[in-house]
Image 1: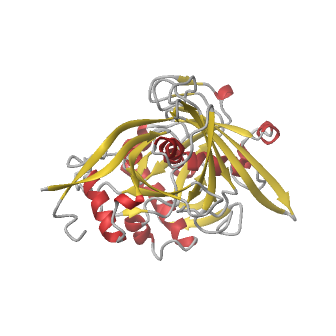
Image 2 (image 1 turned 60 degrees about the horizontal axis):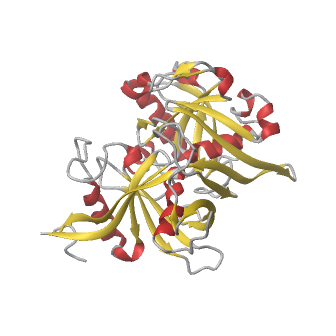
Length: 386
């Protein structure tokens, strides 16, 4: 026997996941997580998620739990979960900016906010980071209008543009813009040596390193994706940074139970390269080349919650990103980032007050689509205590 749980499968930006109403899931969080893991086919030691709806990749193994807000300053509450593929873990430590793009359309279509044409503004309380996200959602005939001319690299075709405003994104997980207290740090990493990095917490904590740190040029894609040596070096840096900022007690703990944050990205000066789809991205089209990891694998595009701290750090003197971008980025307040799938643009409003940087807002455009609605099936044995 199986139980049926109402759910909607949605794409948000370059990610995909099940959206649940909070009241359709158990109140007991451990039971809730067992049910969601079973729905995705996790944990799967073969990393295929063949017994669930997961797509065997971190970008398709995400979930959103939505509820109406009791606070009049918000419309809905959104809780994000990164569902592990091979371990019985759902990580709620950070947010996913791409999945955030689908929250507004979900809220409109589910009647959680009143639809107003042509644009419905949805005020989202992001539960993981305790931050405000405002989504401007195109609406037609009372529903999210997924048709439009806005394109994002990493998703075929075009769609209705959803503009996301992330207000005061600093300190989303650690409570500090620079969790170490510095815009740039150096630490010793076994097998690598002294590593210079910037760790900024805005939307999510993210570590930035230069490609030469691990012997790369910065434009590599398949090499990063397939090389266990490169992955191990990046994880050695990431896991030690997690300990440094107090998210875990040991690097081993960070690798096992703290996979989602902090994330790590390789950043380099603009260079020509070919995307995974064979398109030539020229150095004149971008301000930086970026390659990021998520849950131990190469992200085939770039996280929205990666673009936000990158845009912010580009405006902050002393970071390794500031040192590598053309100062026109400061004047425009917009940065163009070349990732494996193409280009992503993000805007940032940063002010310096009393000699301290204040990250006021980040803005980014995304698309989303409702893919399937109905019920996800979960074995009764998993939910027997419900």
